[in-house]
Image (cartoon, rainbow, N blue to C red; front, side, top):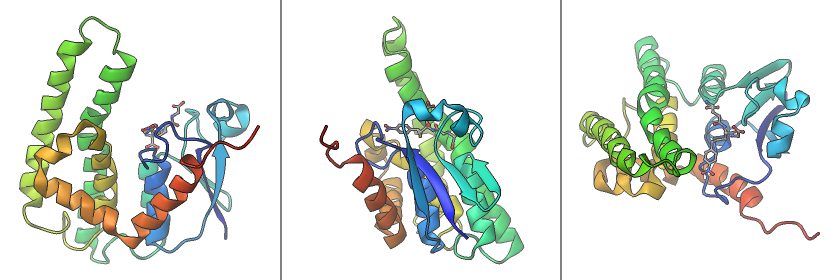
Length: 217
Ligand code: GTB
């Protein structure tokens, strides 16, 4: 069976690995599943062919036989449930790992995404400068709680799981803001995630696409 994902033809981050295909690539690498990538432009994403895969015209998507998935949470969960390596066998531990995936996407990521909104989408509004510190404080409050729960542990709940994969991916979005540096325990947690061979392979694969010089005209 072949798996094909979609990714930016050229990510706006120039290869920093912040676009969401990286977390899907990482999950595929963790479970040892080879995959193909179809690169799409911003224009392609809004065309009917891509909208059939992704109703909101975004990346990434995953195609496997006759299954088409969008939303990174659903894609990573599908990979983790259908292959060994990303979820514990014990039913309760498995449920808790999935809870951490949801926590990453529903509780930690939304305030982090607000940085992008306030800086880039609302940056020209007269109140944007006042809003930014509020957004940063909201993120700090979450990070204080997350750091307290992680403590000195290596991963959030026992062995590395899809929950850690998603949480590290979400926290990586903070790197440009410098906020992660205020939380050495979380910064070390993120570094442990990045040091995993599967993450390194995923990062290198997206880097090869996004940091390459543009093709000669
Ligand atoms: N909830 C969805 C999921 O988790 O799959 C969100 C998917 C999403 O936001 N996709 C973005 C997209 O396709 C790319 S990843 N955007 C195009 C559009 O909406 O038209 C978000 C992203 C984009 C760029 C950077 N960057 O340059 O740093 C980081 C993250």
